[in-house]
Length: 169
Image (tube, rainbow, N blue to C red; front, side, top):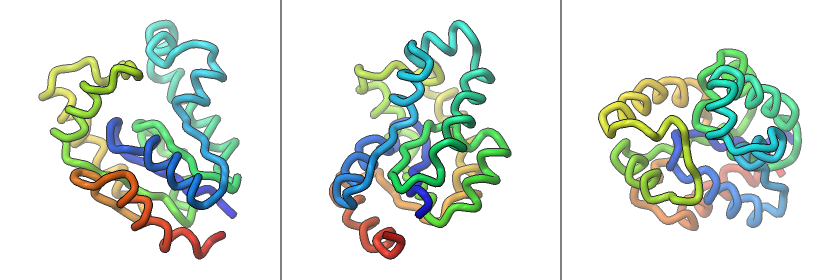
């Protein structure tokens, strides 16, 4: 089985939903942010500062190609869709789930998340929303399923997804 891939902008709920979905399906969960922090032996913010966004995106691409055929739920980083190579790979997969939320909602979620410093979130709200809107068509291009997470609990989202993805197990 190919992986079940969660895509979406930072703050859309990929990690929270991914953990719950993997528990419900009893398959492994791979959080790209956590995996990259372990692999790089530093925080994402530190890596961005030392090596830049392009180097980080290359590491992200390498990880995607290593794990995309595993039977697991993958919570990707918000920028996974920026590279055409990644979009091409994602288009080959059966379940690429776009967790979409309103721009203002994800902005507020990111501001309230004190556990994760996101380098690209250190912008004005206007610039943050512009970044969100620039990525929206890329998420839509590769998604096989889109779920609006704006006013839903993670449990509700997982319930919606279970029937869709169980057929591949």
